[in-house]
Length: 594
Image (cartoon, rainbow, N blue to C red; front, side, top):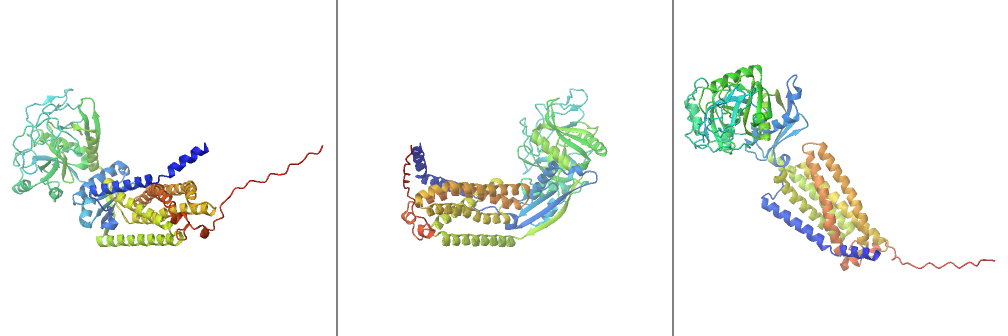
């Protein structure tokens, strides 16, 4: 059995090329993926690339402390992301910090005043009547044929309009009295202007008709748009992001305005909207509900305050007397139409239900939007930090210089103390550096990882951690040589003990990095993430590169003969003479006396 075990180990250690080929293939594959993705440099954080960092603290009104919770903070983050995207900054980061703060990082020197104006105010939610709408770019908006008539509600209490009254494309959506069951949409159901998540799908092919006229009658509700508003509507191109970001800017709640919205098929539509009839603060609560009674599926229910109930009953009563598209009301969040359901009757009682081909996610997100506009939640600007691109470049340069100095000192120490063995250590450091760089470049577009100054510090600290693993192995090999063994057996005998020490050391480093990543926020997480990543790569490099390379070098005469510049000279190490086993002399037999 002993001979079999020895032969198996010899076979495993005689083919170190396999490990070297494996890590080489991994490097080539990752490098190819980096160039294929088009991101050949790591994504830089705000402190290195420059930009604006805004810290906002949530402040509740008296008696509404419970309004600050994870759901509402996540909704606020979603809204702020839409705002900063309007600045044309694709690398903007909006994230929560703790349970009351939101951090907005906008790299590359974006104007801080504009950013503060975009994210520092509470979301504005309004219900506005639709005067006219059509697809952006001048095309006619698809409009289903209105051949159906309103059908009676199964309960006999309310009548829900399921006919085609709407001049937009998307999923059927209507507003009904929340106190009654909502009828299922008919085959000629109208279509929704835009779902918040764009997840709704059209359930009927629309029949195109002429686009809605901006000068359509609006008696009993919003007045006819004046010439200035019609001119703004005519030249409004909602397909352009810069135009959408400024559509309706400066319009007061009491004035008519233009706006943009996206339907479920991803098409942008433009609107002329009347003065706000209901404010977002008039919504007491909104919830996503699975309506199994009428088979309407996921719906969004709204409950209004006392004053909001009266306002909503008045506006829906007016809209119910109009033809499409003026029987619709637009839910406008921060100047963008997020939904535009139609009505057929006055909705009284303070409750309403928006139904259509919602999914659970889309209904929950629309409910969050409606609730957020009604929450007594404002944000106080705690701090605004502007980092110029020049300052970020100086910090990056300083970090790289510090890393280069640290690497040079490590290499000098290795050359002085380990001599020829330092070649293996330096080669291992280069492989580790290449893997770290390529993976960081890939993580930018993949998970949004940004290399900030603390992350650079983590990479510098990793140089010492990686070199420490080599030193542990080299010293184990030297200990074996001091015991009188030749190099090749010393390399193999030293590996099990060195491997155990390396794994324990790296496990402790990785555990510290993981704990630091979990319990901290912001830029400190960059340090923890980089430290954990480089620790894992250290294990990979030592197992797949350092040990196999040392095994190959042990077969070369320069190292095997113990050359004085190899770092493994037995005389310089104070090696003992080779151990020779001798047979013990047998003790003389003692004669027994009778």
